[in-house]
Amino acid sequence: MNIKKLSAAVIAAAVLTVAAPMTGVQPDLLSVTASAASPDPVQTEYKTGDLFGVAMNPETGETFGEATDVMDAHQISTKEFGNGAIYECRVLDDGTIKVATDCMGNDFIHQGRKITIPSEICGYTVTEIGGISEDSHCDGGFSSITIPDTVKTINQSAFAFNFYLEEINFGANSQLKLIDMWAFQDCRSLKSVSIPASVETIATGAFGNTDEDFSSKLIGKDFTNVYSLASINFADNSKLKLIDQWAFQRQTALKSIVLPDSLEKIGGGAFINCSGLTEITIPANVNEIGSSAFSCTGSNIMNISKIEVDPDNKNYKSVDGILFSKDGKTIVRYPAAKNGSY
Image: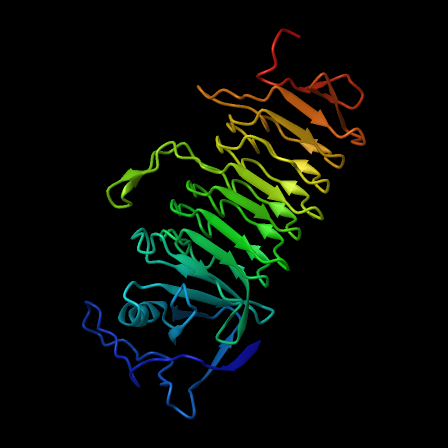
């Protein structure tokens, strides 16, 4: 499928020549070279699977230029904005795009800045974030990220290792369905997150922390044993069905959580090493709870003293705060912090 559009690229010079690589071979000129004054911008044609880069101010959304070679887009952004921030864009089968906020590796050049991802880039609707290439996650130090309502998927590792991220904002009309594997892994400054009603799956390790030490002169702060997520909120009309394995592992600041009524499965280790949790209630529709969903490993101590179950649940019940199978023949989980013997 071919998709035609008129580029909205704005480049200060009519033609920007990128420096030649070490081989001495002169690279191609940028694919889009129209200036703001041009009455007839270059027409660009993309097909499914094509990759292009857009240099954009991540805070204001101002577009500096566009190029089919992503590194060329970096050159534009470095020239116009000074730090190499771009969106990598891939055309999907339905004519929309998925984007990655490429921040040039581990430079942490956006410390303290806020980013608002646009719902449309160069005439294409943004429906996915991340997952364009192995290194296309954004660990550039943004403190706040706003996700547009048009996004349906946040792909694997899209914002992983953004240690400075403190807040994630979703719109009231969010269409988001999937928060994929490790999407916000080790975002150690994240304090609160409100999951949109449209989300159906929180995948493996989506908000999980590893036990790795992150102390470096490069990032300017020691993030070892920093786990800040204290609040997870779900919309009243939530469609969430799955919280997969390790989804919230090692979120030690989390004291309580109210799971949505729509939830059907809690994966193994979903809340493993969430040592701050003291009690949890299993909703009526949950029909599967994986092993070690509410456990601790190593020297960590789990403080859950009570597990409650909605009385309408057909698979589980709670007796004196202990999680049983519905028929009462199997103890599914004995709360680690419950006093006395049993």
